[in-house]
Each structure stands twice: as C-alpha cells, then as structure tokens.
Image (tube, rainbow, N blue to C red; front, side, top):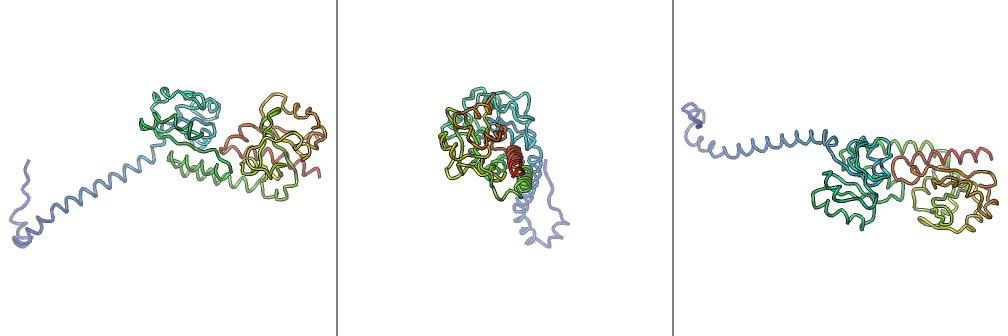
Length: 311
C-alpha cells in the first residue's frame, strides 16, 4: 500500500520548498513522539488493570499460620493454593489448598502448583531449601518472626505491599492501634504481677522483655515477673515461687495443664494459686504474630481487671 503524502496544496501551505524540507525533517521526531505517547498510555491503562485485578489471580503458598492469618485478613484466603498443616484450620482459607508439612514441604509438589508467591517464616537455612523454586521464577518471601507489636505491623504492611493490598493492610494496622489505645488507656499503673508459661514442666519456658508477649502484658495492665530478663527464657521453679505472681497465664494447650500447675510442689504458696487465678490464654492468639494477637490482649486484660476490681 502506498500513500500520497504531499500535494500542491501542501506545498502552498508550507510556503515553498524550504519549509517542506523542514517539515520532512521533523516527521521522524513526530512519529517517535506519537509512538511514545501511545506506549505510555497503554502502560498506564495496563497498570491500572493489573493493580485492580492481579490480587484475584495471585497464586499463593503460605507455609506459616501467622502469614496465612494475615493473608485471610487481606481477603486473600481464596488465593492460597498451598499451606502448612497449622494453617489448614485458619478460618477463611481456601478449602482446596494443598497441605504441606511445616518446615519440610515437598518442593516438587510445590513446583507443580505453579505459585506466584511462597510466603515463609524461618531461618536463612530454611529459606535456602527453596532455591529451586526461586530459580523457577517463584517469588520467595521470608517474614522474620516478629519480636514486637511494631514488627507485626511491619509484617502486615510488607505482605500487603507484595500482594497489592497495601491499603487494606494499612487499615488493619490502624484498626489494631485504635483497639489497643482503647484497651490500654486505663492500664497505666501495671500493679498486677504476672507469670506467663509457654512450655510446661519439666521444660518450663517463659519470656522477658523484647518480646511481643511482654508488650501485651504491659498493655493489659500487668507486670511480667521476668521483665528484667531478655527474650525467651527457661526459669527455674524457685524463681517463680519467690516472685509470687498474682496471676499465672499459660498458653500450653494440653488437657489438665492448669490443674498440673496448681499441684506443683511449693506452688501452693503462690498468690495466683492460692486465689485460683491460673488462666489459659488461647495458644494461637498468643503465639502467632498476626492481627489476632489483639484477642490475646483482650483475654489478659479481662483477667487482670478482675484482680484490680477486687482490690
């Protein structure tokens, strides 16, 4: 096909041969400009479509229940095509998601799922297991275990950013901050002493400062008897008896656990045991760094308020 670009009328309009040469010289520039504008407009339009719809198409594997809970909170439960066994019972997860062993998933089976994103929570040595997936173009995201409430917020925002749900993640964080402010506004004196057990005898474990559980205790109006220690600790029974906590919390989900605590030799002299103030705090709420930590805070706050009201 050929085009007759110029005519006598155009020559007259351009006022002669000199003007025509200038016009012809500018044609490539004009064509490049038109091409650039066309591509730019197309990219902007395509980007808007992708941001609007990509979250509906994302294929996600979540291999940590805390990450799964955050994804569900971002309305991405149906996008989860694979999950660890502890995520299986998270309300809102895709019921057809393939279940893997946490810490030791079958990489070949993961590859067959053709995921876009695999969310992990573990050490560097654990992440290294997923090199084959990474080389296949799968985005491997490792969420480090949060040691503070702020770090839980950071995890939510990071997952929200990676899944095109940053606005929703920001809203989740703001909602949690508002709830915490409401709960903790009258809990400034922290006069109730608390021992929180996360592993039962004979392998007793608890925690000190620089843990999100210690923050929850403080926000609920309690004082951790081990607040002067750092991180996760293994205290001896004598130190617990000598501290004489007013309340004992445990998130050990074992039948008869509270009765076992009350029956320990020497523990009958602890105020919490004498006054029947040994309480179970939901294990999932208090051990998973997701938005559901707020429920553990509600539970602790209610028990601590009972003690304060008795004074």
